[in-house]
Length: 404
Ligand SMILES: Cc1ncc(COP(=O)(O)O)c(C=O)c1O
Image (cartoon, rainbow, N blue to C red; front, side):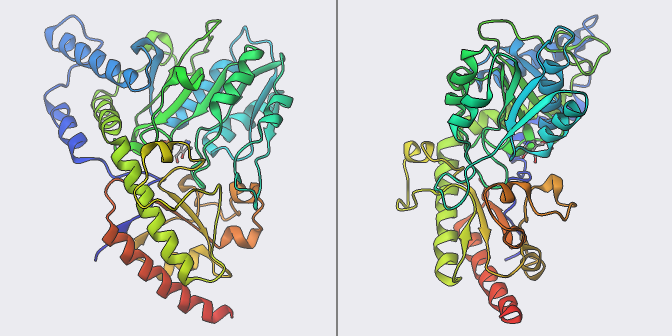
């Protein structure tokens, strides 16, 4: 068997149906959607409006509630700076989690340097079954009428922990505090309805959901009071002046198609990756003494779970973060060159410091370095997983003899 891709949290393979939808946009539809002085421009403008309407409908939002961006990093920047740096923003406190992605921590650090009080809430630690999940009482204690915004990711990119966003939204609404969620890892992996979730701002990226890279969005949903966003990219006034620049037409078409497929296949994909995760965990834990998983626990009895069982889970169905006794994740990856795995977040993989997420759930530095992150996806098969498990067991047995 050739290369096996098991790094679906870093990115996903673009679905062939998405590629097909995008191809005509490479040559046929080249007009600028802003060029309404001619027929070609008007045609593209209409098709863009249809695509954005389709994207919005996947979140139960209206098209004017969606700002197209280059991906979740830009969406997070727009949400955080857009709300906190608005000239009419008087509040100076932000509440977030220690386990957020760098794409959120980066903007927060910058705001902290400019005088904001950023409160990073801890998450529960092992051996709790809810390791990685915030304690709601901590949120309730931190949020007050001086809070400019709360930002809590929907699901974590390293350990798959799903945060209780609906309950956090209830706390925020008591003080009319806008709630932002980075849903990059959740979109396509669980049904998302912005109104039911109760969030005001939601970031996502196309390439995490079998769509193209360099495209994503921020859904902005005002509840009681209108949400004021200070634009970060100014220029030609596109997208209601909130994000200037000629639209990435081909990317938008790909994003719309990817989200349409995600909605269609959410149940099938979720059950599929749940089964693959259980298969890998049951075989590896039987073969490797002392193997641990990082993050919240899950019910693994059911070989073919219903979507309802999967939905109530505290963890993404396709995530498995493994901590191998005494053998470094990096060494295991070197020993299994046919497997695409990761030791943590792709965006911080050049950083040799142990993962801040693993440290936050109580893992030691050594345990963090002994971690492998597996992300199962739509295109993985049981045969691939069986083969990957064989390779990992062999590699572990070889490497562990050197440290015994
Ligand atoms: C939770 C989370 N947020 C944000 C990002 C950044 O997404 P992008 O690189 O598409 O901007 C990622 C990607 O790894 C992620 O996993």
